[in-house]
Figure 1 (tube, one colour):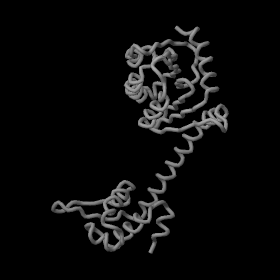
Figure 2: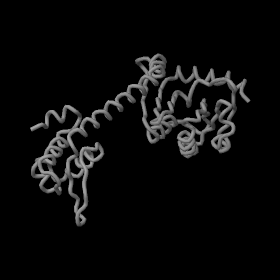
Figure 3: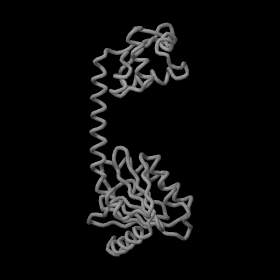
Length: 248
């Protein structure tokens, strides 16, 4: 009866049918829910789990059997509020990275290629792509900004990334701000990484290998922007060389 309206507030078709069926049935096992909602039995547990995550359904266990029940309809208001909060966070994340994305666009132009990776697994994939087709004699360069807020997250990621770097056998030269010196990460750098420090700001978390540049934005869910651009890579290499001479 209210399936279309429930879909407009963010539920899927299956979620709408199951929620409305539970409102009518009260506490129920899955069999009657499947029959009442008209959904496939193979999908019912996935749908119920999503409704549980959204706080719209709960269950109790009687004699090892789950009985599901719909939460009060006003809980939908809480669900909508969470959606609004998530949208606000997404908008803020976008606003934070927009200047960097625009910078990328200005470097890349229409004839170059850029890819975006999200989360730590995505970043590991971006490193694989950064190093693809590199040779052992190639040298990579990086800038790293130590930010205490995201240090633990970054430390775990970069230690994992060293396994990828070892596989390709490249040498690396890096420049970081001085705050990194006293960290476990700085003390753990492998032999193939030569590290220097500066007291002035560095441009960001940037890795350069041949004609590719990887820009990493550390957030709760980090973002990697991999750019295939000879011109951009050369520009960063020149800047790196000038800073390297001043670094300690």
